[in-house]
Image (tube, rainbow, N blue to C red; front, side, top):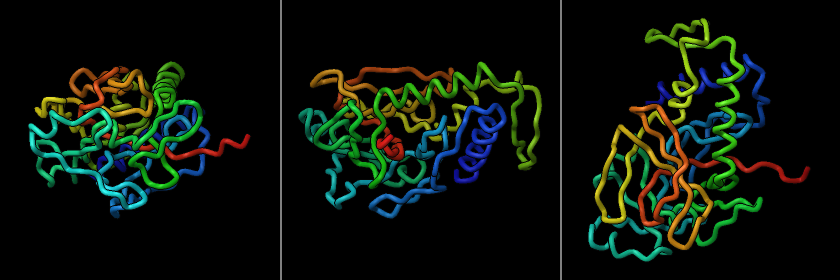
Length: 246
């Protein structure tokens, strides 16, 4: 898994460098959460994103989140109750797929889409992406797709090649961001779509019951904006804070 992620990071970074779409900010190579898990970092359109699904079960201040495995208990959670689970309730799944959080657990107690970062479950200096930040990431890939002239690929031996861009569309590049489709947990505590889809929370609320998410479909190689019930268990990717003093 680490080799796949590293290859994707090299491909995406190389491609954006070629077409001049990327000004490299001060992105670290990795970031560590409060539980000691280490994540690769990928630069997309000048934003620093985690390249792996979050696995932390504690907030940055050490506060733990309830692991709700019982189906009846998950179904009865209130909209502000914080909970997480592993796919099919099995902890060893977290190493590859990360943790599934309901929206309250992912975002903590409050949410803001007005320029104030919502740290939520993310490490210090990182935050839950807003709907706007997800949209910016999408636009970065779409801009690359429109402007590219050449593309790179790495074959199974690790040998790098450069060739015509028509052999690689941006959804193939985008799939590097989502190498581990963790599926999701529904409000009725059922699980679905492992290795087929991944859904990610944003910090942006629609209503008391709904929040914005992004769904990646590995089979159709598509990404779409969703408005989902906050009681679902979705994956989390964090974005590095930026300096707002400009």
